Image (cartoon, rainbow, N blue to C red):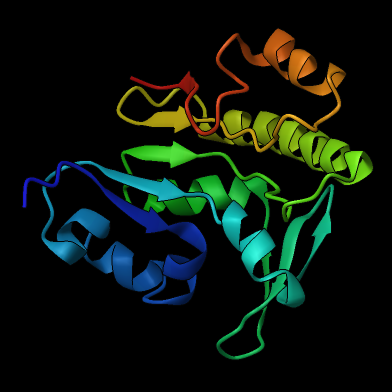
Length: 171
């Protein structure tokens, strides 16, 4: 195929094969023998898809019970960025809370607040790495309270409310 980029998931790579194995290979590129860009998702989607195995803590991050062995895993915004950098991802996503589809404005507003807070922490952890790109995430739809997307745009730029499209920092 003419594949130009591949996607890896931080949560799943953290569990298997694990960061220690990936470090031995000097990152995911060598582990897979892939010389093109790799984008890694933060693990935020698993907050929703594995919701029966986790809870969200505004300060700590997502607290998971591994679906493989029951082990407790805390995925903070900082840890998500550190893992993505340690496996040598080219395009790194900030950790976000991806809520299940709902029209409950309180649930959506809370998810936006958590995601905005975590995005700020992720950006600080990412630093000024010129060799990698950091992308933000916004999960909302037309039923989201009107003031929330405007607040995100005001703080993070005009493209911040486009799903996984704004470039927070990087190359």
